[in-house]
Image 1 (cartoon, rainbow, N blue to C red):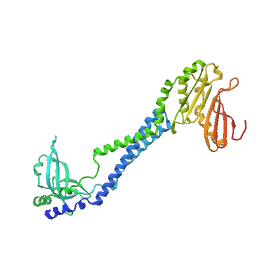
Image 2 (cartoon, rainbow, N blue to C red):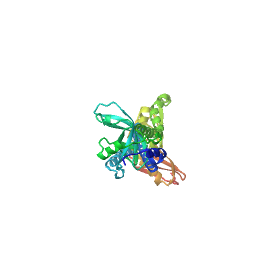
Image 3 (tube, helix red, strand yellow):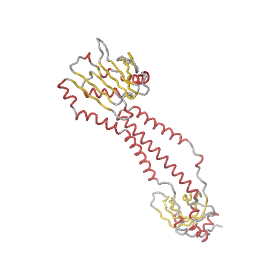
Image 4 (cartoon, rainbow, N blue to C red):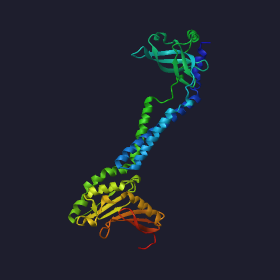
Amino acid sequence: MGTTGQGQAGQAGQDVDEVNAPPVRKRSAVRGFLAATRLTVVSAVTGGALAALVVAVIIKDVPVFLTGGGVLVVLILIGVVAGRRSPADEEPPAGRIALARIEDLRATSGESADVPVKFRLTVAPDDRPAYRVKIEQHINLVDIPAYRPRGIAVVEYHPDEPWKVLIVTRPTAEWSRRAEEAEIDSAPESTLVVSPDMSEGSWCMLTLFAFLAGAALVVLLFRAELFTSGNDDGAAAKSPSSSSSSSASRTFSSSTTVSGPSTSLLAFGVMRVTAMELEARVDTAYVTAITIEDHRMAVRGDSTRPVSETVHLQSLPYELFPGLVREARTTLGVRDPRSWRIDVTPGTGAGAGPRVRVTVTGKEGTAHLDADATGRVTDRRAVGESG
């Protein structure tokens, strides 16, 4: 009863598929695929979120920063919840006891009483064909002489995961008797079973690749904004025609363009930041005209004009301008606005503040509304109205 003879070992070579039980392999393959997919997605999203934070700081885009930070918070919360949940459906499978023939063993160096030993075994369960497996297990120095090539050992294996084998160093009396009486033939090399799971190095490479891919994708999406923000000052320095040639005529003009869907001048804070850049470029805050479009802001000025006939760049309520644009696009009869423009000019008359005009254009025509320096609407012209 404790012996696995020639017939069982011979049958092992013919029944490799039974050893590698197709349902078991399929379940392991599915688990491995799902784990790899989950790790890839999480790593890519994490890399993209961190890259979004860095990109947002460089291009000064608040929505992108909030998006990246929000994604990271969600990932952390999911990790905390998943860590606290105990998966009831992944209980370790129950092990079974069997006999195994030691084909070969090799002890490696160790600094303690338990030495790591690499075994090549032929496992011979009572209810299935014998098969080969390679394992590594720590064995006490005192017990190592009990294990020798062609000897019989008592092992514990898992039917659903036959590559998980553990030598039982203290078997029961019955199994010790069976091991002494048993004779087990070597199973063919073709019956060798290995774990279908990825190695630790493969998991690390997959994580790194997915992380970098997610970060690279975000950088590519915002490459225009990154290059624009980095080259604006350089472009101004390389083409000083606006300031040098205008110095002779005592007039100046300058403009800047932002690109990308997330860098519209309607985004919170973008108008004021752009105005500060233009002020530094023309070296004065007093201008005679300001033009603002979706992705472009331009200023003109004349140094001979008195301050009362100019507009101070930083005194305008840029934070209110997006609301004026929204009101002009929705209340002036232009159902499908194709473009909008804000023109700021000095007011006329003593003590008059700057004049702000918002113009929208669509297939119905052109309409505009006027506002004062506080953002209060003072006049409006809907489509079809004269004046």
